[in-house]
Image 1 (tube, rainbow, N blue to C red):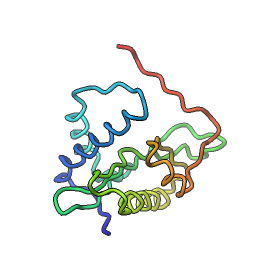
Image 2: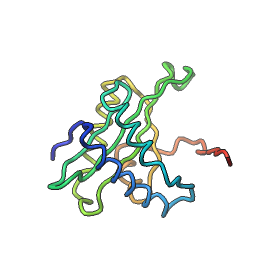
Image 3: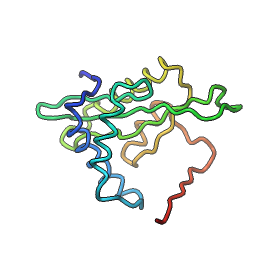
Image 4: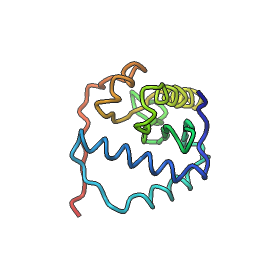
Length: 155
């Protein structure tokens, strides 16, 4: 299986896979979905593909993409558990339902974790669907002891 860097030509398929993930996440959670997010998502992908703080990996299918995953590196103030202030976040891990259970997500997550290690990032966070949680735990993701809380503006 070949995991490769995404290119601008992959953006329509990356948006499609993000829609698949959004539908699946809606089954587990109760977050609001804006109807016009796809254009902003595609524009952001175009801006960030190839940047040093973003990795977008894909696995090809005979037609389109079978799976994708995005790694981001963020900077915040250093602290006792994060001496350089850098941390990673995995976003948009998605596999087309027709290509699940073939190791695509595992291969992409392995590539993302290698990228984080090579980038000197020692902490990576993610949010998991109930389907994907066992895979992430196999890679060593654990509950960190603090509740994950979110604030959203009502406007």
